[in-house]
Length: 120
Image 1 (cartoon, rainbow, N blue to C red):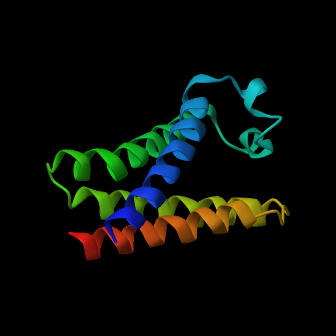
Image 2 (cartoon, rainbow, N blue to C red):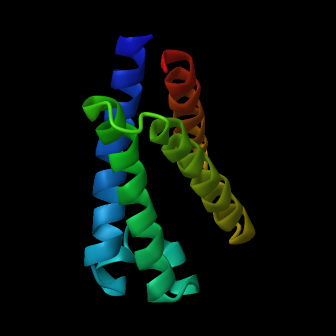
């Protein structure tokens, strides 16, 4: 279980650090080619979502790694699940049926949360 958690949590963390980091740093124009939905959201919301993604990525790795408040790992995973439910809803509301990545991330985050709770 330990190895499975670190593989899933590590991959999710890498994805969310990148995805969240570019939402925090890049302009709307630079995000638009990858994320057409940014036109539907105010930039403070996009930046906040990016910050939540970065915090979720850190929460998956840092608490179990340091042994300080390891209960934060399943909380972070749960937050990423909620984030992906919302992202899937936004895509479907916009008529975008390409939600495979969102569903994959949702399943991976739920798996990381489950692995974190069984591992603790």
